[in-house]
Amino acid sequence: MNAVALRMFDADLLKLRKKRGTLVWVLVLALLPLVVLFTVRAVQHSSTPHRYGPAGGTPGFIDGLRLLCTFFGPLAAILVGVEAGTGDVSAGVFRDLVVTGRSRSALFFSRVPAALAVCWSVMIVGYAIVVACTFAFASHLPTPDTALILNGLGFTLLATGVVCVVAVGFASLTTSKPAAITALIAWQLVASPLIANISSLGSARDGVLSQALVHFSPVHIGGDRGANVTMSQTTALIVMAAWLAVFLALGAWRTRRMDA
Amino acid sequence: MRAPSVDHPSKGQSLPSPAHAPAAAQSTSESTGSRLAIETSGLVKRFGQRAAIDGVDLSVPRGVAFGFLGPNGAGKTTMIRMLLGLTHASAGSMKLLGYPVPAGRAMALRRVGAIVEEPRFHMHLSGRENLRTVAAVRGPETRERIAPALARVGLSERADEKVKGYSLGMRQRLGVARSLLADPLLLILDEPTNGLDPGGIQEFREMIRAMVEQEGRTIFLSSHLLDEVEKVCDAAAIVDRGKVVTQGPIAELAQGGTQNELIVGVDDPDRALSLLDDMAQVREARRSEEGLRVVLADGPEAAATVNARLVSAGLAVARLEPVRHSLEERFLEITARLDATPEEARA
Image 1 (cartoon, rainbow over the protein chains, first blue to last red):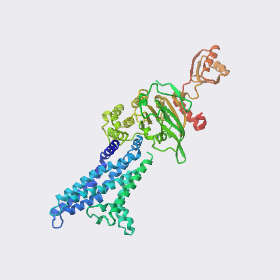
Image 2: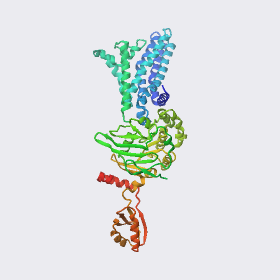
Image 3: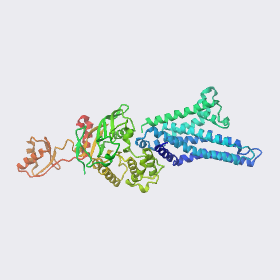
């Protein structure tokens, strides 16, 4: 990364981290469900230990990972990605960046690392909560080893990072924050699980991003999240790469072509 | 105050050039040697069937304040947006600081600052942070210009407040500061005094003149305010319905085709009228509130002949002066004629 790219990243990061309203929602979406999950389970276990098992341990780790990586984490990643993709346009400053003479592609691609930096910062905190609660509330249950913890971190960053980057591309394509957030959340929460459960679609369901991403999970987090599409690791990798390539290309194309 | 004229390369009119060597302009390594800051040829922008810009040929010399004058909807902002690469031209060619646009756009815009329409900012950032985000895109050397730019527009003390707390006038000034980050050889300003109070407008005018006269920068100022252009600019183009109707130095534009008109004050207007009616040098003579209004058939030198004739006839000539039009009168005259016959207006 050269000096200009580094400064552009720093500037985009500044825009995102000072966007307090969005950041609060991102933190609430990513962290609050984890806190609620472990708190409720800990209270249940302490009040009725014979009926409810400990909140932590490996089962707690898996549930926390599922919540963070397949449900609330991607939603938070969408908010960050959309903010990064539409921030300059919606504030009306995109044209002021264009008249600097800097290439529009450079303006687009500097959004991506900044969005990832914010997204991953939040997700690391979320993952730290998962791990901390896993050990704190483990009681007699086994706990994940170091390799699993590191793999879980990698999966968290991958699952939310890919969604975040896709959101940057899609938001840059639409240039409308409400439209992008609505479409992406609807896809993530409604359309993806629905398509994955229509067995008559066969291998066409391989193209659903969330289904491809769960294949990189170090533990089985399918089940009720509808990850019932089987595909090879290679196919999952190709699907993920295709989503990234298509939406980055579309976002860059729109940024280059749009009237500023 | 105003600089001497040089021949205009394309229109055959004279336009002013800077009175002294523009230091900023001469020191730039980016200079292509072109004497023109902006040059367009047959520039067209269509939205569907409608031509917002219709074959504009424009030549703006370096080191002057150049007004781009026209009523709302005349195509001023569209023209600026094309020059800056914010929207594509449908046809024609253009150059900024000698670089063809869009091919050499990146090089050209390195030393161009601009305010397009009302200046917009990230409201959740401070004034200084907003400038930081633009400086980051422009290049490493630009960051050092943030503090001087803020000081120049008088925003140093409030630079760390969020922009959402700024008045419209402060945002305008911050917009100027942002455009100064480029250390611009060419500053393109679209309706820059919108939202400024009278004091702010006066300061702004002084700043523009200082940029031109002391720093040798070129200012391209789009406005529908005739008074503003007349007071700030050396030269102007009048644009209406996507076409440049006329361009040249302000004084010449204001005079237009009426430089042969005189106001004559005499002790016996009736007798003077009968004398003037018989003179071949006089096309028309009539009474007006100020005296006799005389349109000369020949050039302004015929005024001496008129004076000699009246005096030799024993009339006391108390006043004989050319009619001076304001740019506003000329502008209204042109646009009114354009309503009737566009060809005549361009004549």
